[in-house]
Length: 357
Image 1 (cartoon, rainbow, N blue to C red):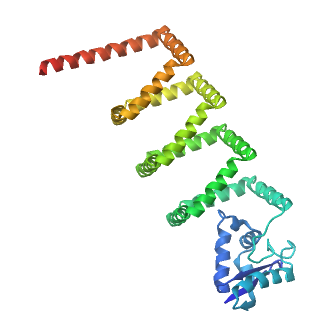
Image 2 (cartoon, rainbow, N blue to C red; image 1 turned 135 degrees about the vertical axis):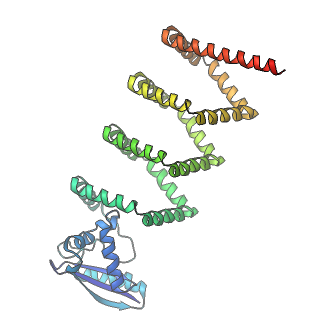
């Protein structure tokens, strides 16, 4: 049994017409629950905002018609009563569409108004703070988190859904206007010291959590264990570096970072800290040995090194960098001490080997 119902706001007499195949009591409970969910788009419809503003007690409910034919109820009776009561008129009711099972298409003018209204709401610090707090509270709820995770996994496990979402994402990023907008937003965010500090704190907190670290590490390993994924990423990286413009931009950004004494000091400290960690050193040593023990990898790396040194530009840059380093007394002293220490250790090892033989 399906029904068409009418909900009336007793404070201002505005109405909402709806369809359900549940009991009216159950449907009303869903409306009330949705009105409390600020993180959901539906929770910010005019009807949901009215429930929050006037309170549940301000509304009365009634059934307009019942019908055994659910399709007729949805596609005939709902549009009929919405039109009859003119409940899409903002002065009369809360309905946003003309009803029925066919998706309603907004005109560009209406979309512009909706967008402007949303921007105005988010420009209000109080609204932004309340909504942000509600979203955080909901996302921190283990039950909600588990439900969303299960729903997301189920969606992505469906090849058809995965293909559609993938195509939609590709289409968006193929739109120069969309790319420009996203790039501008990203640049603005990362130019904001407060945003950078927040993102850095979140990242550090995640990686400091052994459970999160293990999950992220496992996910990354699983991705790279997929030959198709590895090939795609490798091809994308090669394509980027083969683009002179991209190459120039990355090179300029790298030079700018290393020219900044503060950035240079931070990066140098981070590298030193990593190499001072015996576990990290052991891992890197094992990876390096494994790579060089693989004839195919060894051949590729050897060919890559030879190709670089065969490039006059690369050769000139490295030669200039080497000369500059050796011309710096501090660098020269450090490198000389490092070489001496390496030879001392090698000599010791040779003595040990001689003694054992």
